[in-house]
Length: 202
Image (cartoon, rainbow, N blue to C red; front, side, top):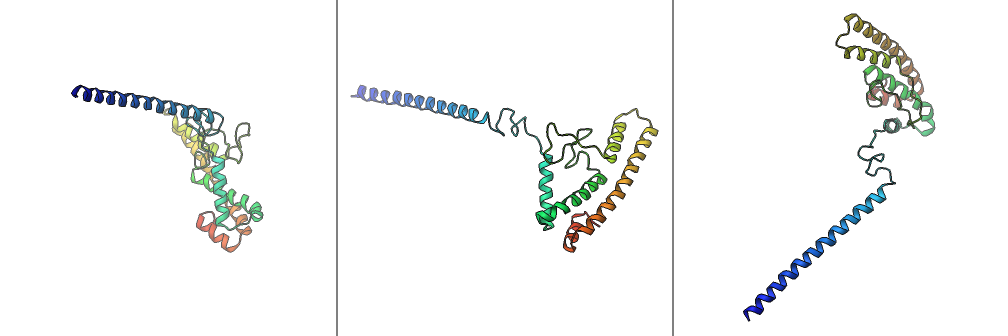
């Protein structure tokens, strides 16, 4: 009797071990199949892994899209209709861009493209899209930055580049004043108040 009991327990243990191994192999096979299916499905989809756009190694900050979102937000704050924004939008964005240049964030800021890089922040910009011409402030800023990076730069060279940047900023301030005047004439009182709160008008 004791031998039968021991034999039965041994059979149960062996059976349980075999069942556990079988289930483990089946689960591993299913997991590999799922991974393979995901890899195959993702190979032709944007945002998939493996260097595709939007995935690790292929993700790119879309400045044009961010600018478009900000412009839409401004349109909403000003309660401007799509038809009205066709005229008002360029005036608002011109004032915004000039403000960005004077604040020092026009290059390498939210919508800049970094130091001495091509400017492709226009909507739809991408490969094959001509880079816009840098402004006088951007050029002077880059030249001054390059001079400062040179530890052997002479003080007179720095002074010269600094004077060029200040001259460019003075010209931009005059351009901003004109742009603000044009914008102020084009908006309603409520819109003007919103623009003052946004810092685009005084």
